[in-house]
Image (tube, rainbow, N blue to C red; front, side, top):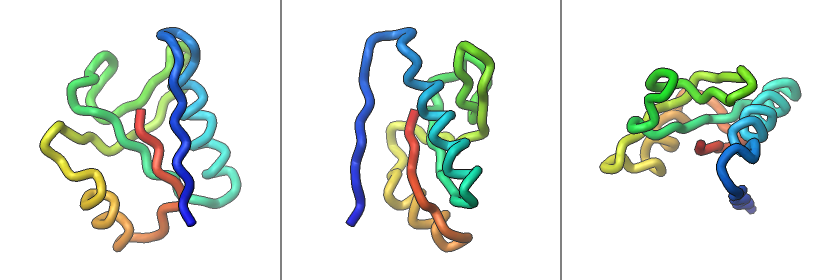
Length: 87
């Protein structure tokens, strides 16, 4: 059974840092996280999740009209996805 975790807090509380740390921990154990970031977030560059402390990772870009379920299912055909992280 899948679990859903939702982290929320004020700005500058470290949400992105926690997300990137989670992705790192999954990779370190040989698992495959799938990261998503919205297209409208282009503060650093499109397709990159970056924290203020300098951690960063490539991510799949999505727009309002995209179907995240279908995008995930398409990527499952290419291999395992052990967790989905959305910034």
